[in-house]
Amino acid sequence: MTAIETGATSPDGARVIGTLSPSRAGDFMTCPLLYRFRVIDRIPERPSPAAVRGTLVHAVLERLFDIPAARRTPATALELLGPEWDRLLTEEPELADLFDGEDVETARAEWLAEARAMVERYFVLEDPRRLEPASRELYVETVLDSGLQLRGYIDRLDVAPTGEVRVVDYKTGKAPRADFEARALFQMKFYALVLWRLRGTVPRLLQLMYLGNGEVLRYSPDEADLRATERKVDALWQAIRRAMDSGEWRPRKSRLCDWCDHQERCPSFGGEPPPLPAVAGGPGLPREEVSPRDPRDDV
View 1 (tube, rainbow, N blue to C red):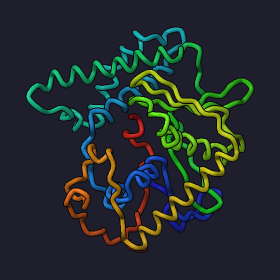
View 2 (view 1 turned 120 degrees about the vertical axis):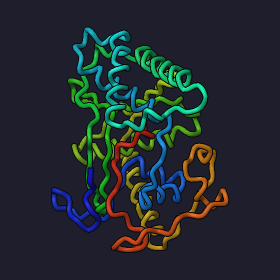
View 3 (view 1 turned 90 degrees about the horizontal axis):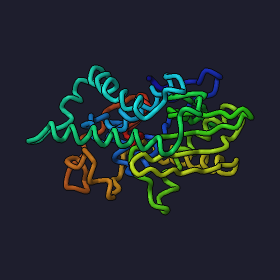
View 4 (view 1 turned 135 degrees about the vertical axis):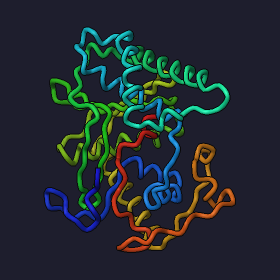
């Protein structure tokens, strides 16, 4: 999906100065150089088993709500795993090489067993027979007063008969420690901000469901929270623009570096980034934002 280009106008006539998704905002907060590699250089990354498993489990849970409520059982959900995996392989044949090493079949079997465990764990957290989501995989976008366009995909939106809104996101990782909860909630507050700007109503509840260990993180935002989130994303965009204008994208070393595909080109590991691509509009200015639906968000 192509973003509205910088300097263009949105469908309602607002001037757009840039586009940001929660994935890319998270990249910049994690490491500005990682943002550059993904958005400016667009360097391909190998799909990780964890991210692909997240995509598979998300697909099963989305498809589950196409089935009549009475049949939304663990057995039915598990029956969806095979067809959904076949569909992913058809759409992305390179996933057939997801596993390597001496015992590929064992690695694949263990990977699928973990996916099954996550699907089963979902049913411990809630009963889908009692739910009728208003939306699934909902694409949302809005333009802030600053001109920054925010957009992304919401896993599930529940609307009560009274009109109260619950934003639900599935994660196939484990719930973070208490001191990392604020970072985990940023993505949800991002979505809540977009919905508030679109609909004029603050979502009643933000709910993160961690299928890796069966925990649920819930948060009730208010207008003050969302105004603070708006200030934060505007400040993030200004920091991104400064990096674009200067061409300086500083690495930020952390434990997440252990899983990064870009160590060979990262100064923190003795590497050297490639030259910035020549793009009209300034040093390192992205021609368009990458798709806001990022499989890494599912983990």
